[in-house]
Structure formats: structure tokens, C-alpha cells
Amino acid sequence: MVAEIVVMKRMSRSFAFARNSAAALTLSALTVSAVLAQDAPSGDQPQPQQQQQATPRKPVTPTVMKTFGGWDVRCYPVSSPAPCDMWEAIAFKKGGQLAVSVSIVYVPSQDTHLLQLIVPLGVDFATGAKVLTDTFTSDTMKYHHCDRIGCYLVVPQGNPVVEALNNHDSMKVRVTQFRGKSIDLNVPLKGFGEAHSAMVEFAKQKASNAAPASGSP
Image 1: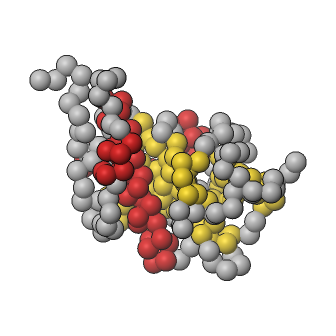
Image 2: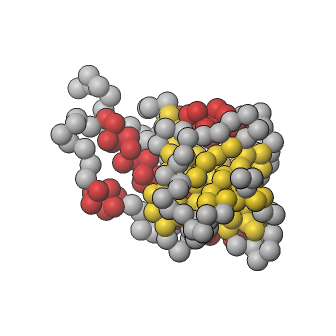
Image 3: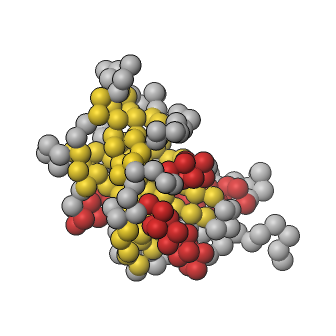
């Protein structure tokens, strides 16, 4: 079945920032939890309650904000193995509501990317979603949770997706609505490569290690 392609536009910067600053911090907290889980001994991994307590409760203003095409690179004044992200938010042309938000962080200590996507409410939670370009289709991504902003997809091992997005004009996030209809949410990739390079460099400069490296005193 061919998915429906909806008409969308770049979300206004001020509105998108207000809607997504908390979402970016959610990803930052999940990043910390993921890195701690990888670095900790098998019997000493963070518990869900501990992870929830680590989630920031108040918005934090980024200290670095640069724009490349449609992508913003932001770094936050937090002690984190991944204090920077790159993101883009797209709105439905009709109504101006959030259609899709994509946030990517880089964890220098693990040389890995984590992705967070936010899509509208009303999706089939069990079906998951996929990222597509004209030459790439990701594995099915599972939803993490939903709130009043939308439904969140978190990809803890995002290197293959990030690598596949380079040198493309756009990507699509294919979601399935609750009643079974597939929709492609289009995300322009103008400025993606430059934004990614800047985000990685900032992350290397500003990251703090969440745990000592193996063998360190």
C-alpha cells in the first residue's frame, strides 16, 4: 500500500523551540541513562525509577544555538555525555500543528548517535514507524511513550540512520494511524551535513563522561 504524503512546512522557530525544548531535554536524560547502562556492570544498571528521577523538570536555555538550513544545533549547560543536539521541527500546513520533530545527539564516549522523533498523537502504537530515503529503509522503530506534545520514538543505536541521511534532500517518517492508514511525514535535509558536523564537534568539546572508562582508576 502506498502511504499518503501530507503537505507540511517548517515550523516557526519560536513556536517550535517552545514546543521542543522539553523534548530535547527528555532525549538528553535518556542519553545519560543509555550511556550509564552501557558503562555500568550488569548487576548495577540504572532502574526505571532512577531514570525518571534524572529527567529534567524545568526548561533549560541552550548556550549554543546555530542554524544550518532547516536544522538547529543546540548545546545545553548541563553535565552530560551528550549535551548537544541537532533538530528540526515540521508543522502541518493546515493548522500549523506539529507534524514531526527530529532530534539527534552524539555521544563521543561511545561514538554513537541517539535519535528521538516526535509524531502526532493517534498513531498505532504497536506498529511503530520507519525512516526512509530513496535508498534506505530503517528497521521498525518502537514508540517509547506519548504525552500532550505527541508520541516519541527513541533510537538508541542511530549510527546507520544518520549515515543514511547524508547526501539526501529529504527523509520520510512513515507512521501508521490507529485505523491502519499509513502516512509519510516529510523532513527536509537541507543543511543536515553541516549541522551534523557542528553538533559532533561541539559534543566532543563539551561532553562530560558519565562513568569512568573501563580500566580507569
